[in-house]
Image (cartoon, rainbow, N blue to C red):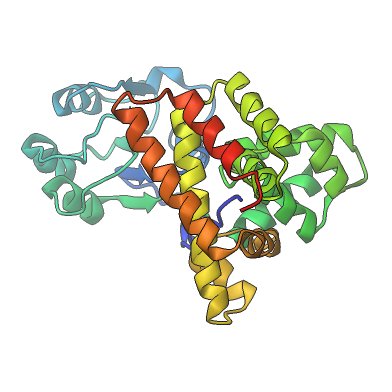
Length: 338
């Protein structure tokens, strides 16, 4: 099922950024990096509105992917046009992946009238330009918020839209759709349009929201373990219609079988469900379902299925069997009584 997000101080960093910008404390450089693109774009827009308020396109320059430090310097050194500041936005240019002496030397000398926003998927803290950015600007690592923060965020968005979202329903929405914030906001917008002015229910989520691939594969494995090969194959072909590759599906089956195997080992140590959920990153909403499924697929057979899934992956890679057939064979075989 959908994973819990890793605990982080992402939301605290964003609150501090909002306070700084509201107080007029604008830095010459902002490095935004991490895996949560929704938050990155939100921070970018908040900084942009503070640096160049209004529709001031004359004083915003974008450096596309593939740009160089020299490209940044060329526009950053320009004076703003009838404004206090100029803004330069460098998006996903990998400026903090490898050493760049030109950029490292320039960062401490950014003009007072210029602010640069770097947006990166990752950044190497060992690099000179990273250390220069930390000393002369603001760094925000924007990873996925923890489950509690995501839940509060969803409930607040629902309130702003005139709807109510109970904590347990918010958990169900995250468990169904995953933790990616763009996807969650799109699903919540859909729910609020369907249920204006009332409380959103788990039944609404089930009716309207699209499960992520992990949840779809979990349902397929559940059908297999319960001996319903027809349903398992139907769910598999539904995934193929959604353009999911058989090899990716097979990999996800292996991953989820491995997780079930780990659950079995933890249950043997009499660990509670909450401890298992925390250890394996499983949504608290669905930990009971994971445990029940692991126990239904008794340990020796689970290990056998896990081993065979790995063997089928190798057979596909060597061309001994087609990827589509490999998944079908696995589903049919382990849908039968062991």
